[in-house]
Length: 333
Image (cartoon, rainbow, N blue to C red; front, top):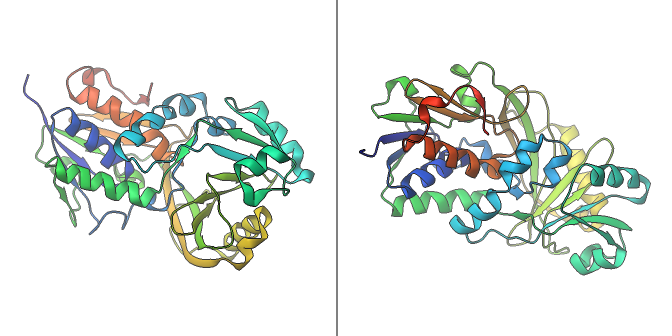
């Protein structure tokens, strides 16, 4: 059986991971992207990059945790700068009940007292009495990861054609993988957009080794360390599909949350505010949908880097002739 020619639409995390999986199996692949460069119009450029399948059990369906565990092996193989230092979840003493609630719905963690918290994150020593430590989780810098995948694809002879805005129906290929995210709502009318806002700050006054989640009954927040003293701060999920500027309320809440984690963030330099629109279906679960010669990978919601490897692996297996004819509008299994 000859290898199919596959065109991947979209150079966000779903598209680049899918192209990597296909190229690794010897499939002839090309990627087309409407933007002029990696990250210019991809919501994954503004992601946190947390690979946290067990933390996500608290607010997501079990499918997310199950599929997300694949990412913990996939990303280190394809992006060696992935850091598997775990996740630390903390809460102020007045919100200790939030920590207990989190623990009831998660697994694969250990309770940490103030001594253990100080061992894990010396700059948080004495600031929190209790925490949850998810030792097996990981994180990465999404921008570095996307750039690295694009470079790896180039090394494998996979072209990425930028400034190319095409619909699946107009592409000359044996198969099309539609990985356009929310832009695919022209054909996936059931998609909805969930707006996320974030801020990147730089501080020389604090060091973190892993993502830290600060629980709050109204506004839970995460802080993800990156290189050169940078930290990504995020958590907002608004049922809106616009990508306008960050609102004043979100900016205040993000910065106040970081300050509550550690006062040193009050002196941090604001480097960037960012907004993305995450693609989601009604149940917030991903789907692999076949329509003729087009397979849509979509609905990764707020779990793009976590779920893309599992979804891409299933798509690659199908397109290599295993079970494509049996794929319908169902959840990824």
